[in-house]
Structure formats: structure tokens, C-alpha cells
Length: 276
Ligand SMILES: NC(=O)c1ccc[n+]([C@@H]2O[C@H](COP(=O)([O-])OP(=O)(O)OC[C@H]3O[C@@H](n4cnc5c(N)ncnc54)[C@H](OP(=O)(O)O)[C@@H]3O)[C@@H](O)[C@H]2O)c1
Image 1: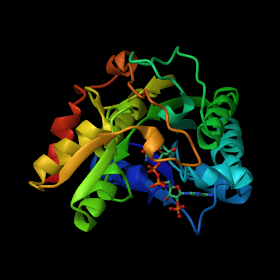
Image 2: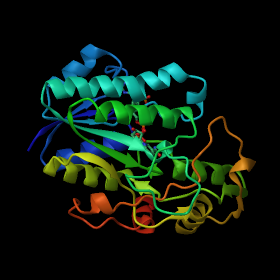
Image 3: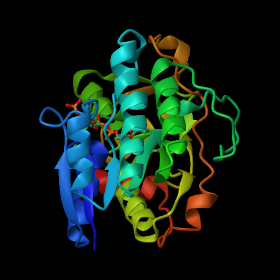
Image 4: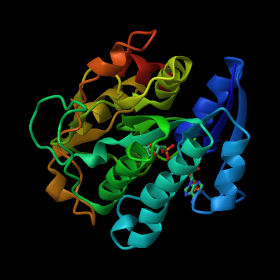
């Protein structure tokens, strides 16, 4: 069993990972704002030196605000990730760094693999890509795991926003032109524990099995919760936002499938469990 420092350990993914890693017998150390700031070298040094393994879930995740708060976003998602990896490498630690489908700007309907060329549409995605590149070139033993469309207990996400909107309005409009795989952070946590167990290195895509549009996901959620609302599909252009979203977030997960000791659940299976 290992000592694992989880940076951003009280966020949506970090909190599920902390719980699972703890119940699997690892010693878990949680680092998060405001006591811990990943942009401060002394904070990072403390978090790294206490652990065998570091999982970086800390991120600036306000996708739209990032377009105006450019430096704040870049300092967390890119520069701090790079410095963290450099320091972890100097101390011989193993690092898992979490990244995102927002590094892509694809609008096809094929599954994107680790070999596909990133092309971020907005600043958040651009800084996450720069963070990946800095981690990859740091010399640290590492894995980078891209995840997408995540939901979990400790965070605002697509499900919480939809249920909130359903409580306020009888008519709901959800975009039908963005496709991806809604993924439970508890499932991501299981995958991360597998990577940790094998000290797997390299770049990986992880999502639930199967894909859907946001509209189809909303339909599923309302049906599972037995909420009756008038739901219609619209285009992304009907919801103008400062940051553009990728149309295609379908992941090819065959690389990580060779490492996992479980079969990735279908998105409906995990979401039904979560909603219960
Ligand atoms: N949510 C998604 O749909 C999604 C999709 C793909 C990839 N990801 C990636 O998944 C990872 C985990 O994200 P999440 O969904 O769990 O987001 P989250 O709930 O926002 O968690 C991120 C955590 O990082 C903390 N943080 C922010 N700035 C920090 C700083 N300077 N120093 C230390 N901690 C800081 C946040 O604290 P505060 O809350 O106080 O700011 C929060 O606890 C991120 O790398 C994200 O890019 C997320």
C-alpha cells in the first residue's frame, strides 16, 4: 500500500478518489484550497515529499471565465502542473495528472485516441494541453489521464444543472449537437487505482462505454428520476458562451482497457446507479 497525495482532493474527482483509495488501504493525504495552493512552490514541495504517489486533480475549471482570467487559469493548469512534475521527478515520485477532452476541437463522429492531434477551441483547453506537455517533458515518471463529461457527488455538473433547471422550469432545451460519454468520477477513481497499482506510464483516455448527445443524456436523467418536463433539442449556437465547446468528445479507450482490471461500465449503467 502507498501514501498518495491528492491535489485538489476535495473537488469532484479528488473526493471520490480519496474515498476509494482510503478504502483500498492506501494512506491518503488531501491537499486543496485554501490551505494548499498548487501555484506555490513550498505548498507543492510539502505535498510531494510526504507521498510515494501524487495525483493532480487540482485545476482551474471555470471554462467560460478562463477566457478573461487567462493568467490565473494558465498558472494553475499549465505552469503549476509543469513545476509539480519537475519537483516530483527530482524526488523520484510517480505522478498521475488529470486532463480533459477540451484539448480537442473535433467535430467528426469518430472516437478520438491518444494519437489524435489536440486542437483546443478555448483558453481552458489550451492551458490543459500546455499542462500535459509540461508534465510529459518534465522527466517525471507519470501518467496523464484525459477524462470527459464527468459527474459526481461533490461538484456542479451536467446532472446537477439539469435537475436544478427542471426544478425551475416546465420546458427544457438541451444541446443535441455535442456528443460524448458521461462518466462517473467513482469510475474514474477505480481506473486511477489500477494505473497506480501498475505504475502505468503514458497518455490515456478514460470514459464510460457508449456515447450520446447532451440531449439524449438529459432525456435519460429525466426518465430515471421520473420527472415529466417538455424537453427539446437545440444547437450549441442557441446557447452562446464565451468559450466554444468541442462537438465530438467520443473517446477511444482501448489503450487503458488493456490495463484496467474491470470492464468499463456503460454510461447508462453508472448514471442509473449514481441517480439512485
Ligand atoms: N468536470 C468535468 O466535466 C471534467 C471533464 C474533463 C476533465 N476534468 C478534469 O478533471 C480534474 C478534476 O476536476 P473536477 O471536475 O474534480 O473539478 P473541481 O471539482 O473543480 O476540482 C478541482 C479542485 O482543484 C482545486 N483548485 C483550484 N485551484 C487550485 C489551486 N490553485 N491550488 C490547489 N487546488 C486548486 C479546486 O478548489 P476550489 O473549488 O476552491 O477552486 C477544486 O477543489 C481537472 O483536471 C479537470 O480539468 C473535469
